[in-house]
Length: 269
Image (tube, rainbow, N blue to C red; front, side, top):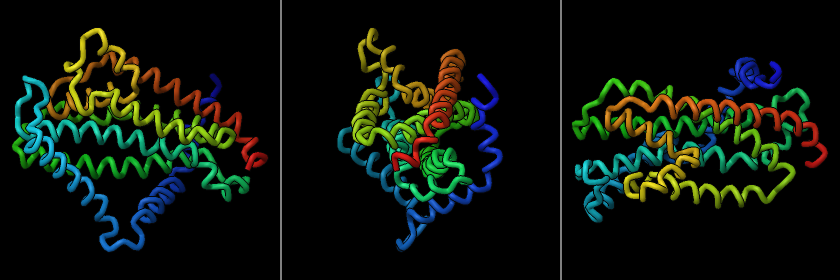
């Protein structure tokens, strides 16, 4: 692997200010013209968590396994998983159309097209962080005892972000040449949602099937974030080590594919 192969690190450093400006423009543009503006980024997760709490805790009276019988815990555990999934799905769903929706940048030779997935990730990460803040407030109001293990969340999420970036570069480049990939990704994201322990615990499945769920890139991160935040246990460092290696390789392959195909973008578009 040459230094150029991991050029996404130097590209991020070199274009950091431009990326931040484009992220802010993306976030503000989403709420431009609305009455509440940026407040919607807080109102939406509060409303959704309130709905989950009412439906699952009071209507269905759902419990997260026998060992977790708290009335409100199911909704909070569910919401934690959905924060991780929404971060992933927002980036991956938009990735195939990133270049197609920014044709004007393709024609600008000096514009670094590789930063578009960073902008998409930054916008999604902003909304994930606001949802996470809402989750922390609800946990605090519920009287949840926060363990020091919650400090491991950035370490757990970092390889997840690398994986997202690798997939985003690959899909953004491939989407220029294969327009149907957007529809395929939409269906795949639905499958990943229900084939991850978001609406149900892993223990609800037969034991021989459980390892296969870890082929889903969301499963381990959902499990580890819940472990350190809600249940106060240490991350599974062995599994996180394997996940990090896969994430680094995915980021490298996605970056390499993007750079090998970008010369053909202008011709196709």
